Image (cartoon, rainbow, N blue to C red; front, side, top):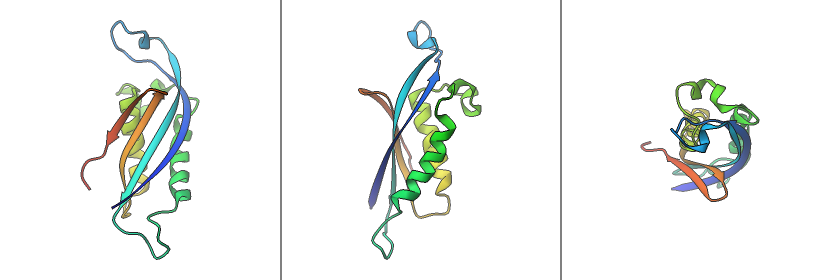
Length: 125
């Protein structure tokens, strides 16, 4: 099994309903996103998938989040824009980009600060 990782960043604002927490106020983060994709076999060139392909897909997804108020995005109207839900959403969107491919998203980490992140681990094939 091979696993590739790409790291990217985006900046955005959000609010979380957390009863009495300072996170209930609108605030922003400079998120670091780590995406991991896996696959069983490399191609004839010895690669699982070109890093450029992964980076392009991830850049398209980041453009949907960067410099936005996340609470106003369609997915987050019914789900809080927590780091956990951001990691899930990125994993889902990236997974759609690889539909029909032997490459699968294995996990996504969303770092909201240098010392705090949430990771969504994709289970199953």
